[in-house]
Image (tube, rainbow, N blue to C red; front, side, top):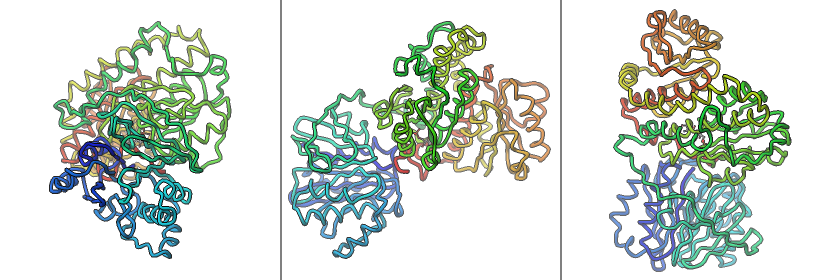
Length: 616
Ligand code: M6R
């Protein structure tokens, strides 16, 4: 969470910082601030709320902005203290000579604060970051060297951090340090950049250095010096950034989320391109580095992920067990990392993450690597920390996803898991590739993009249903089998962008407790595809109806019985149960979108959320 930008060079720093922060809004958006270096002074400007508020503050300070060619900026997602102007970064020491912006959490901030108060440090905010400002200033007072002071300070800090530090007596440099939070240094000509993520600087340079954990760097406009925490000089490994400047256009859609939902047919085509050409062809996954022998030795798969990526993993379990016949466990990273887990060289660990920066998943990946498991990462960001930790990488190619609610990245994750499953089958059991079910799954995958389009091009019924149900305060989503994760994901979409209480249940579990909540105020949305569990879900719907719940059906099959039972039916094109999660979810994304839009919510940047969750 939180985004950091820094600049030192010859451009107007305020403009580079503001633009950079606008590309990092996905990391948090509850307040923002910049510190601008001017002759012998550091000027700080902050604003609570969206970045536009800071933009307006800076518009009134053009005199200062015109003079400053170096500075640091921050966009916040509050961890310690309310999202107020006081708690917004940058933070300073007592005299305001030193400023710090920070991404991460300082776990021992209370102990450090108590210690620093003994030296007369006065704390104004409720943040953990302010401790870093005082601590680095305290170290600086001893050695008068900003890089050494930062190094000494971070050695005392426990937790995760990416810092940018400036001191008014050293206007020619910015110091940065990192541990368990991303930070890149953009390399320019007569200017250098700092950012939490590539989009913030890609307009200016395609060359960058990825700072690693426990490294500190001194950045001047024409030099970069990196050391470890012992002060040993390290090589500047400059890499080429494989990114085009991102055109952050909504392409005429009201929100990025709607645009991204509509992009899913093309995303599906992109994911399949070059990997699956026809129903009889082999799956090509060049980046999976396991040899056929190693693949045959896999005895167990564990999938680790969070949020929407976790739901993709749950679908993955069904298909991996059904087709590849490998026992598969799926677990939320945040739970996985606090258990005595078992994995070895015969366990394949699949980490799924849109951003590749989710702190819990990164920690889990590091743990399993130590135990010898092969780590395969499925991510939308091949440049991310997770991708860099991977033994094998499956980039999902969904394109930059701006809206906080994940949609097209989920589609890309799902299809990548189907491809991976079919690839495993091809290696471990080549004969079964000719099986009717596998050939027909491949054929359906190739037809999927057109079916997604059929849903996104025909939203009338979804819009009407959204309007009809937008005043309800609670929803239950039910499904069985491979669509149970669809129920979880549909409910997550609805709650995160509309703030309506929505819970996904396995339909069979309804009668074991949740049914107690049902009455006419609690609509039940059932996902039911014609397949082995259809009749069972229908029975569960009958049970709900008997408790007067309003019923919405999302299905590929309508008959007299379903017409009588459901209050509203949203249909999808015909599709097998096996691939139906990839189509049903599009209906649920659109339903959540139109309900939130109807309620006038901030769809792309819902309250309290951030797209990239970089704290545990
Ligand atoms: O970047 P990741 O896929 O690792 O992120 C995981 C979750 O934070 C993410 O899926 C979150 O649940 C989204 N807001 C869902 O829309």
